[in-house]
Length: 251
Image (spheres, rainbow, N blue to C red):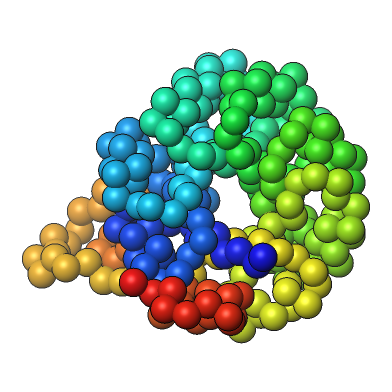
């Protein structure tokens, strides 16, 4: 069965995606960082308010995926909390100094995540040897790999995505990065069964008063009176393509 995972940066967006027909939510904070670990309050609310599977990301900072001992300790603590809260899966990934899968740490996490579905995220797209990495992740018992085929967009990485999908003896290869309604058919035709999309749009802030000359961002040019949000119509349209036989999926 084809599945659509939607990346959401708030519980509000997760609810929108669920109503529009998403199959699963990747829950994150900090869209400008590419997704960081959500707050405790967000995690608790997501468990209360969202009924489809929610897999939170475990990523303590932006940038690369080679972590310090303290960062790894924080990640293990976050995983323990997510397991305690009852999340069915998590999204995580880490590399060593040479760009290979950090196997010792991933083994520790996989033991800790026993019974949870683990998605190895786009750290995979920065790894040194993707075919070797796939075999290692299969041995670890990872459920799926979120990847753009080591390109800036998944559409550009279709060749490697096909190769990985044919090679995989366990992990689901889930295409992500630039997956949208206009190119959805290319991934389906390539034989991929799970797709990941932000399906988003920028929406203006409801604030009418806007203080000029003061920024809360390190990027003083950024627009702080807009935010990224899931586009319900886009999710519904993508879902209808992936689930053509389903009726009345939208609540």
